[in-house]
Image (cartoon, rainbow, N blue to C red):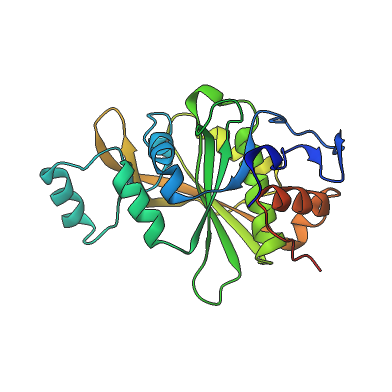
Length: 250
């Protein structure tokens, strides 16, 4: 594995480091993308997932171990519903156990060990050629700088260029603060909204300190639509190079 200094910075042409690709890269120079390592990145992952601004957007994530009453309430309504506790030990355990999820992290190049954001890509059920994009989180102090867009683009490159899947799907939790932000990112990247799912997920409510049943809006991107973009092949080469993966595009 190459040293950090040798890693490709997003937004730079790998064949000519002084050049940039012809479409805008909002987060140019602010982050370095790489595949995440649960054992190394656990502390930062827990910090990102437990941010107050992020928690309502994250399905099934709680900031700490819930009270016995809250756990009993959830188990009574939804027996056996799995939850992710955003603590260092539980986040590490979750990602080490769920090996079907690939972590992509945005590393801050100026602060050693600090993550500016993260996203997870999960293959679907056995034999299903759909990649699920989830747990998209950007550091509260670094939002509105294009980092979320970079993470989604990297996830798309991984799904269509490395896994060679036919679809990418992402689901946005509705009726939470700033739920329009992830929708805008997905639409800009070519995702199309699907039928709204009413009362189909639970996420943490900061005000009440409880899990709330929420509505959700799925977004879908087809392989054919992804490759209609003039820069799709360049994106795949660029992002997979950053992730140190070999493109599998025919």
